[in-house]
Length: 244
Image (tube, rainbow, N blue to C red):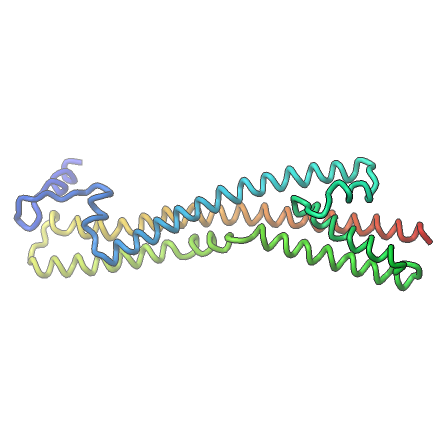
């Protein structure tokens, strides 16, 4: 600590000014390229945290809505009554899958497009396709901006390293110009450069960890939607057979 304090308080280049080793001081003393790298990494970090919190809250809400819908679905209520309750504007992906399938079901049955075995098989395929497209569309909306977390997690450290390399190059250039290799001259430039890598790590580590966790949760939710769609098409197929 004493050695560091001496460096931090040592005059720069033989002058009377002291070297500010605080976070703010390191930023203000950095080269403009290193500053740009730091600012970009800080913006990426803040945006990553905003995405993380938004996705966590969104997935929690979706899980609760899915559980509530499935409880109602398996409570014994008729499909027609449940569809009337969901209405034309379902408020979660699972009810959207249900509503899309029921719309196709009602339209086909009302037009008499399920009177033969071939027609029923075609109707089943249409319903499966409608649910598949709906699931894909809903999952794309849920996964939106997750790619940004992956990008930050994979590249922020390298961006910070670029700032570090640039800062060290400038630091050595200043050392050569001043012809002074004392610790008081070397330490500030190296510290500024390494600070860029530190910010890169601060941005990358949470983004990478959150991406892995959130991706797993999104994948499990997608499996839940697919399982519901499979169970629902089985119920509809059974009703078609009973109408024969």
